Image (cartoon, rainbow, N blue to C red; front, top):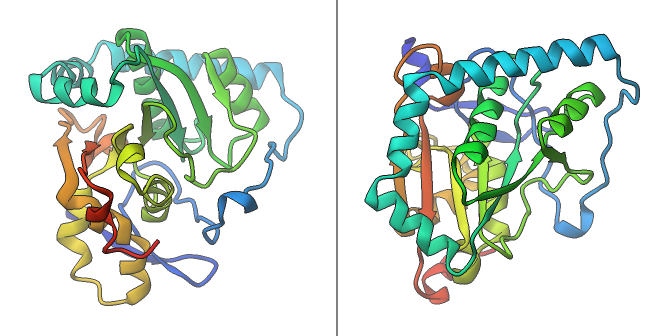
Length: 276
C-alpha cells in the first residue's frame, strides 16, 4: 500500500475553498458545491435522459459480479462478524430503540459504471440489507449518476433521490448513512443537520474515520480546512468508533480507513460550544 493512501490530504475545490479529503483508488474526486441550506436544495435528474439496453445490461452484469465477489470474500465475513460483536450490537439496539428497521441513505457513491470501488461499496450495502434483518429501504444519491446507473440502482432495489440534499438529511427515524470516502464537507453537513441529542442518537454513520480526521487536521493551519471539519471535530468526544478491517488489497481502495460511528451526547448543552 502506498504511504500516501494512508494519510489525509488537502485539495483546493473549483469554487476556491479548501477541503480535507482522503485519497481514493480507482475513482475520481467529486467536488462539492458551496454548502446550501435545506431550503436551497434543488431537484435533480440525470443529464442524460436516455438509457441504452446493452449498456444497462453490461452494468448489471458488473454489479452482479461485484456482489458475488464481496459475498464470498473473507472481508465480508469479517465485517459481518464485527457487526455481531456485543459492543456494536449494543450501539445498534440503542439507535433502533422501539423500531425494527433502520433505513439506509447512501451519499456520494460515485460512478458505479466507471469505477470498481463504487461498485464494491454499493455491493456491500446491498449485501448488508440482504444479510441484516434490521436494515430497511435504501436510498442513493450522487449528482454524477447517469440515467443508466439510476436504472440499475432501481433494479437492484434502491431508490434514487430526486433532490440533492447535500447531506442535510435529518434523522427523524433511525438511519444508517453509508458514506465511504466522501468529502469532509458532506459529513459536516450531515452532522450540522442533526446537531441535537435526539437526532444524533438516531444516526449510524459508515464512513471515513473521524479519529483520523482528528489526528491530522491539527497539522493544517488553513482556517477553511478546519472549518470544513468543525462538526466532525466537535462530535469526537461523544463518538464511539469501530474501525473495519480490509483483509486484502482488493478492497483497500474501496474501504480503507472506514469506520462505524455511533453518537451519544447526553445533553444538548454539551453541543452548544460550537456555533451552528
